[in-house]
Length: 85
Image (tube, rainbow, N blue to C red; front, side, top):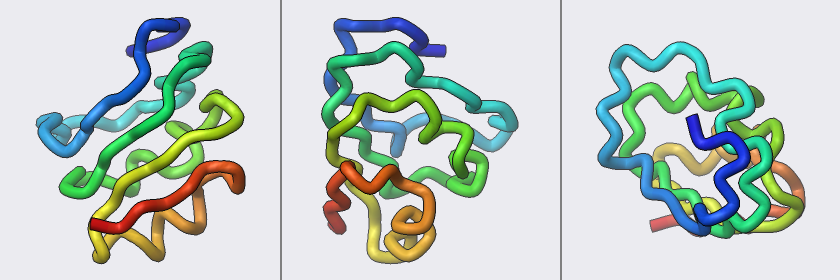
């Protein structure tokens, strides 16, 4: 979806209608300037799993709701900070 999009620095997936999302593998591969992902209201957060996290830049910040915090901590790359809203 956003592969090799070097101009992408921040994205808010909370407003994405994602009821039908089933495939996110490598969604951000090559997005070397991506610094922030917000998914605090992402309905099908389990779709993200390791697929979405594969290919992320080395460092960044992910913003999540308290309800998603434990799940995201299990899958987000170690170098990514987690901010809870």
